[in-house]
Length: 213
Image: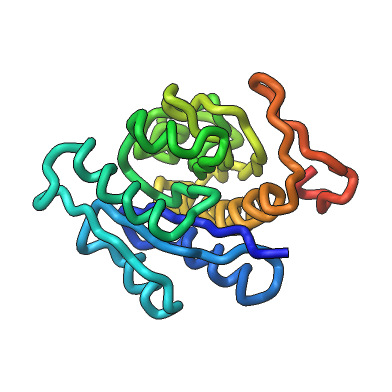
């Protein structure tokens, strides 16, 4: 059986991309990263991809000032590499209708909060601390036109400690992101995600590790 061909979009350091690459290298993820795209030429994650021998494509804001232009360039590369699943791993743009239409039900995003709480922004850990929550975490969800409101695949809770600042909480959430995102991709690769309206049913959920069930 051929490996799932994954395209990953990033805008920054690419640590979640690295988590996917590492899971593949350990034999825990039956997929291959076919191409990595970015809307920022200086995204550090691009070098992670290059070190792993993964093709990259850049649609930088300076060269493509319109979002539709950038995403058309990225879509061209995704199509050229026969991508089957698109993963947003720290991509800081809302996907337009062209990309979403090309991958219906086949776009996963990782967000650093327990959605639907603190969605729609780029500083979820800061927002959680400001609100005074006692538990935060992260969510992998299918992407829809409604930002951060797509059906939830997996979540992991992270307790908020009394001494936490934004950096400390965000770092502990990121550890869980690195665990959760590759597992969600593997569930997709195994055909175990059944989308029923807003609910994602995980087939054979009894096989999940206790921390992910």
